[in-house]
Amino acid sequence: MRLGIMGGTFDPIHLGHLHVARAALVEAALQSVLFLPDGDPPHKQPGASGEDRLRMTQLAIANDPAFWASDMELRRPGRTYTVDTLMELMREDPQRELYYLIGSDTLFQFPTWKTAHKVAALCSMLVVPRPGTDIDEVRWFMRKLFSDFGLTSALLTQPGPDISSTRIRARVKSGQDITALVPQAVAQYIAQHQLYQQDLT
Image (spheres, rainbow, N blue to C red):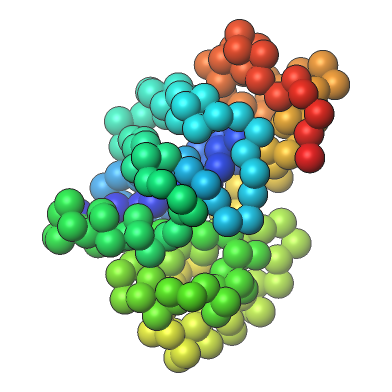
């Protein structure tokens, strides 16, 4: 089974996430894509609770049978690291082929990961180009990561719409409409539960 993995804070999940997941499903011939809200990510402090972020993710993907969500990382105590998730997924089903979706900006940080070699042995990367990305530079770096770490990767062709969760939270805080940026069910959940009303950092 070719399983795509999309991790993130999903704070909140938005149409850009869904666009990238659908593109990966087609371009990499995946059977399904797993959405994994981060528990305690090393580099971010989520604005909504893990329970709210998981529920919004579930609502966003409810109508797509190829997508599913897990609270795997939310249940894990302490910091959330990719290698732990990959190892758990392989223990569940050793026959899985794992394809981790990663932004081209994050790809350049891969050599700093303490477990880079182990991650490279467990999965392939599907690299999502960011708006304004130098594609030639990304392709060069992908070759370097294969040489240095044995990391296999493929560059997706679609960058997806330029939407950020930070901008969505700011719009909610200022009372602006977000229905063009998130699935309708997510917008309704945010309004009903009065998420992102507090000062944002």
